[in-house]
Length: 490
Image 1: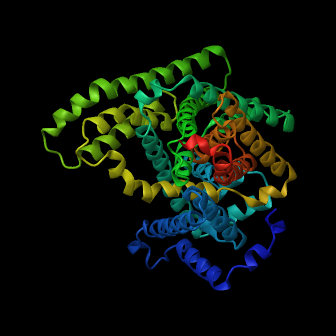
Image 2: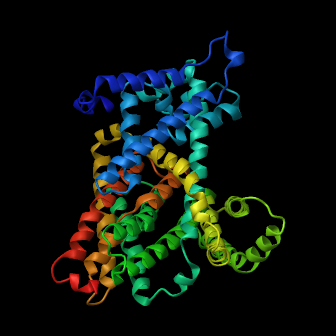
Image 3: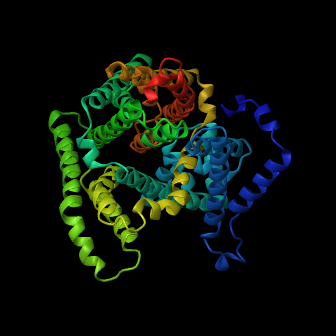
């Protein structure tokens, strides 16, 4: 329980800072009184929440970059620390934000059954002290405001996921994928098989009585490799020209593509409630057909369509068309029973060649989307950090799960380096495949939304992401720059 969390962690912070946080969140939660209700704008508390999230993400990202770490780590840490501190201080709005999918389920139950939010919480949640605190908040004047803020922030974070995967697709060249060598292929293959088997095996040993879907989803989460984090590390080390770097980045792209395919398959048969070859085959065919069709659209349809639209001299055509395709593809993927992020990634693949080859004279779509990415993508990571409930680590089983899946995540990717041949550094390739980053968090959030990933496992996954992200830069520096290996720089 949170009561067991060390109070010194809070007492070490300046009292003025906590007073400031309490004042802001109390003001954010305050519902308008009867005399002002007609003049209150419901968007006002949402605006304050977004300012706080954006400021926290900016501050956290800045601090960890000073330490040589990617900004995503700071965004996760800020969300985790602020949300758990606010929960300890009984702040209502952040307490609801911290609930994640539970808050959405409560809202859905209240709307469909025509009951109050508090009654919906009582029906859905087990009778615990934590549930009683949620019911108390939802019964108060702050309850409706807290749910309103959560619904908007959650929806915004979902849009952020779509944009993030769209950008990943834009940075993934179909032509380069076709040119991937056998070394990259075998590294990617081991990078998928090893962590998946270790993750599934570890979960089955720890929880043999739990549904198989839980172990399978953890295995899929461990498959992902963060292309962005790995590329950033190589650039920071000025080692991007190394053959190891090219192999790692190519293999990481393949891991993410196959990981998205596995996610689509697993999500599909979890939704259907059946596990059979026919259902898996259908989902696989849908995913492959969707990706192939998307690439076909990018090669044949998109250039002709945009050239005709360009004659209309529409302002900001590239930005509007790019986002439009991303959102439409995400919607189509959802209608086909696939994850929306599959559609967004496919849209990026579809537009990559045209926008990077046909319109070189203009700003790239990546450049145009950069302000939007900076504004809303951190919302997703801060919200994910907020949903890490530190009190779950009061249960030794959660701590054990975190340790096991982290060990499986590290070992599984390090083993992938065995696919390399001399004089390449197997250790450098394996370590470079380690960071999970945003893709693993997205997979975990999908699993949480499906009800497969519990609060404890979700918290353990976030810790795994942080550990692998923290370990990679120093280990990769060691693997690349140790005496006897620097000759590969030539």
